[in-house]
Length: 261
Image 1 (cartoon, helix red, strand yellow):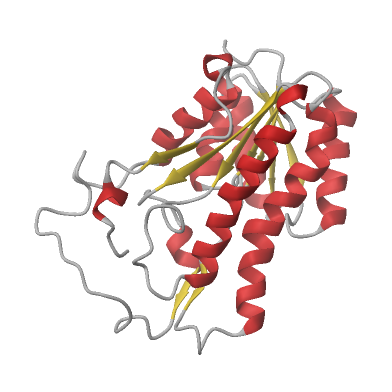
Image 2 (cartoon, helix red, strand yellow):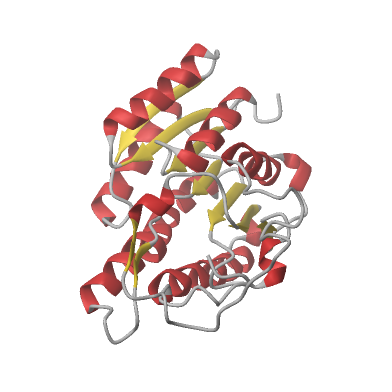
């Protein structure tokens, strides 16, 4: 298997893209530490990993809290002695609202989870990755990278643009240590993330757009978590050994239309 003997940390592993990636990485031989704030969801993920013959562990933690992420890295290395792959996937859509209505604490919460959470995940993982080299994959979005028409998503898009900059900075910083750092930018994916989107008065913002042929050129529908997981596997494996500092959009061509979500 592609990742036999390696150890992977997946944040936001209780559902959606994170869960699909955790299951696939484990299927390909990695020992997977599944992290999120909700133990019940993580236990289901790890149970599925083990039922499929893999090895996993539950790590609860809030990616926006330094003490949680420092402890998480220690727990993983204490159990398995190494860390080779990090998929920094945890995130929220947060509040989408006109800027004059977006409260400072709402802005701060989105930035804390999405951008600071990515920083903290990597900060405490990197010392272990440097020992043998490895792969970091960050989950950003088409928003803030190719798409800027989702009016009101100011905090979300800014956090996602920040993740791309963080990825490129670290790709150079860690290159000599043979740690590759890449970022994936999903478009519409059939997950539960829209359930944590709080939209307020966004209907009249921005420039209306309509595409009669539909918003998903390649397949005519949103992608799946499993499709995104396949890209994560590629970037985690030696098949991408010469790829670093790169954005990869996975959206069926959606972002090329510049659509509003």
